[in-house]
Image (cartoon, rainbow over the protein chains, first blue to last red):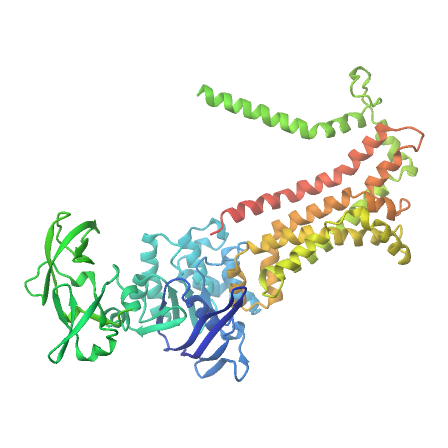
Length: 360
Length: 275
């Protein structure tokens, strides 16, 4: 099922006054797509999920499920969560503690007053699919984190929802389990072909799961794109900083014009600002970004070469993260070679890996 | 090793002392109720007997069973209603956004801080006007209003500790607000409801002032007042009978607490494993 959000805004009224949680969100989720909403905590991503689910009402805007209008402030339309046929998995799983696993999974069907035999069959089917058949008689407090999560997913899927919402479902699992759960989740979604919206603050999770990623910050969408697009073509500094295991190096540099070209000066390096990026220059300054993995310590083929001082080395297993300084700039470099601390080394990067941003 | 053992022994001794300190009055009560003389300090004279019990149970003039029955009914009904109302109120306060939520809570608590004695005269007048003196409602109604604030506070804090995601999840599973309350919140809050209910029950069971002034005879009189009425009945203090009656009236309360205790403990264990 396709989902469309038009100009969705949400304002809360609290003791502190008006708080704008979401402003002017426009988003289209394609049929059968796995969409990930990524952002730091407090950026409004869970609110957005609640609005789609119908747990909360937007302050303004319209929401369409397929062709059907499910919310509109102007036309005064609000379809209750019950009638939207969506399922949600919560961060803390929200299993009903007083019911057995079987009762938990059967609950949505019980509320619909379905026939007992059909309920039993459906619950067993979904339990089989998620490998929790042996746990049906257990109580939630007897389960491990991973098992609880499977039960929560089973309960969500048993109703055959049109839309599957996941709110940080993996963040309570330990690192090992998170990896396997991630793969399983992706396989499950591929097999069931349910339109899925997945909320997370973990960019690795977002990159590995999402067909498209929506990067959000402070109640606004910063960029929508495939994992490759948000990684290689970040539209702004926030996206560039948020995506990537080690944060991007970012420098604000002076620009000077020389003949017909404009150059940014990073210490002694003279970096040409391409014409299509000239609009980013503000007060004779521009922001330049380069990812730590794009800075090389074998410099033969690189466009720009500089000498940096190694301050600290962090071992990441297969690579090292060097914290270095060049003039008064801090530069992080990801490399396979190990260097002694306090040594001076050569580092280089090429023109095509540079990102330009406005200076603030 | 020796030090550990010593600590253990000392700990046990301290515990036993504390238990003895708490239970001594009850022990005193039991011993006196089963003995001919009521002077526990002259142990020589103590003689075992059932006389105290047979006496008060045989003579219908004592109305022992009436008092116990009255107490159980009045305390039971007032505890049930006050906890029911308080739970619904607590659900609203913990789940819905509306202005002055916290002020309402404080206001209700403040209203329970009036000393009982300050309103008892007025309460008597009201009950006379309503023609309720010496009936169950005469006590049930004030007990309900006296129990609601503490129950509301217990239930509000308990319901606030239940994750809101449970509500959301139930909402998406197709429940209405009322269904969420009945099918999810009430069963999950059972330990809190039982603690609040027990506290309300015990308050009503032990209450003396209202019961003394708003009841006249065995048709509505409760145990605490009944015990007091024993005094002077024969121109003396019949300690043996008083203690026997007190022991009898404690049996149902004791059983109720024992029966519900496992739910309270169960609740503690369950919430400890959440997450």
